[in-house]
Amino acid sequence: MGVIRGSLLGYLPPVTILRPAVLVPGPWCFALPLWGNPVLPCAAGLQAGGLERDFPALMALPGLLTLGTAVRCWEALAAVRQLVASKPAGALGPRLARRCTMQYKRSVLRPILRIADMARVPPELQSGPDAAAQFSALLARMAAACAEPGVAAWRG
Image 1: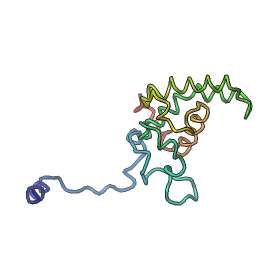
Image 2 (image 1 turned 180 degrees about the vertical axis):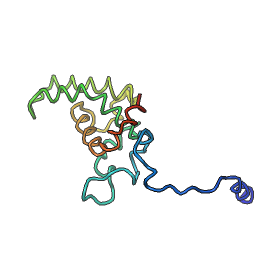
Image 3 (image 1 turned 90 degrees about the horizontal axis):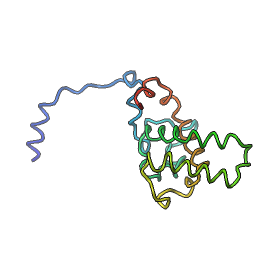
Image 4 (image 1 turned 60 degrees about the vertical axis):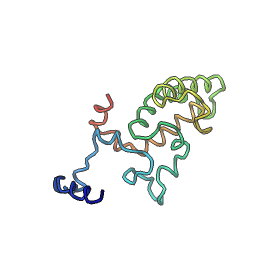
């Protein structure tokens, strides 16, 4: 088996070395894996661990695997962010919090992440306002990649 593999390598084109200048942010960024990816930015001054250490609840969320999925979730949470912003800090009543959570389930959990059972959602992300805050913090770290014009065109 090893001999066959070795002989097949001869049919491959020559190796092309990519220089950092070739890796320009664009639509390809949307397919970047979020977790275990050394290319994605870490907060200034942080040691190894990056996003996994800073966002363990998001990492545990089934279906949240790529930068593109994170951006789609964040965009779908716009109504929740608006509702939260309409009240002074700490003044979000239980009724409005429930409304935000229902919106989160309708716009993110079911259609994007395909989660119907809240038992699969980490406790820190079961509330709409909390999820909106977590996704906003994550996307703030990705702002440079997400702001590229090609990324907006690619997401469709």
